[in-house]
Image (cartoon, rainbow, N blue to C red):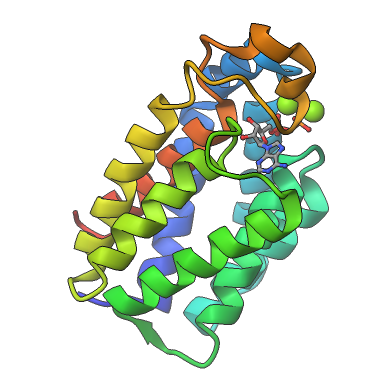
Amino acid sequence: MTCTTETLVAAVRGLAGVVAEHRTELIDLDRAIGDADHGENLNRGFTAVLSALDSSTPDSPSAMLKLVATTLISKVGGASGPLLGTAFLRAATATAGQSELDGAAVAAALKAALDGVVARGKAEVGDKTMVDALAPAVQAATEAAGESVADVLAAAASAAEQGAESTIPLVARKGRASYLGERSAGHLDPGARSTALLLRSLANSAGA
Ligand code: ADP
Ligand code: MG
Ligand code: MG
C-alpha cells in the first residue's frame, strides 16, 4: 500500500489523537529534566493542525506535510516547535510533486526530516534529544525502503522506540535538559519519546 493524500490526512489526525492521549506523560517526562511543557506544546500544535484541516483540504501529501510544518512552527514555542516544524517542512519538500508515496519515498522523507532537525538543532546521536529516536528510525527506514509504507514505518517506529529508551542513561548535551548536567541522566528524553510515539502512530495508520 502506498500513502495517498487521503491516508496521510487521516494519519495526521491520528497523530493529533496520540499527542492528546500522551499529553500528560510527555509533560511529566519534561518536568523531570525540562520545564514541563513538552506535552502541552505538542498538543497545542496538533490541535491547531486539526483546526487548520477543518478549513483547508491539502491536495497532495506534500501539502499535508507543509500544513503541519507551518502550523507547528507558528503555534509551538520552545525547542520542539521549530525542530519538528523543520522536520515536517523538509519532508514536504522531499515529497513535492508526488501524488502517492511508496516505501522509498517515505524513507527519503524521513531522512530529509532528520537532516533538517540536525541542521537546525546541531544535535548528534548521544546528546539525549529527539535525534536519538529519529536517527535510528531513518537508518531502519532506509534499510526497509524497498518494502511497503507500512513496513518502512513499522521498522522506523521500532528503531525509534529503542532509540528513545537509549536516552535514559545519557547526560543531555543539547536543549534545556543540558542545564542539569549529570542530573539529566536516568530520565527518558521527552522529545525522543514523542518522536517514537509519532512514528508508531504513523505506522499504525499505515496498517502496520
Ligand atoms: P523546551 O525545551 O523549549 O521547553 P520542549 O519541551 O517542547 O521545548 O521540547 C524539548 C525537547 O526538544 C527535548 O526533549 C529534546 O528532545 C528536543 N531538543 C531540544 N534541543 C534540541 C536540539 N538542539 N536538537 C534536537 N532536539 C532538541
Ligand atoms: Mg519543555
Ligand atoms: Mg518550554
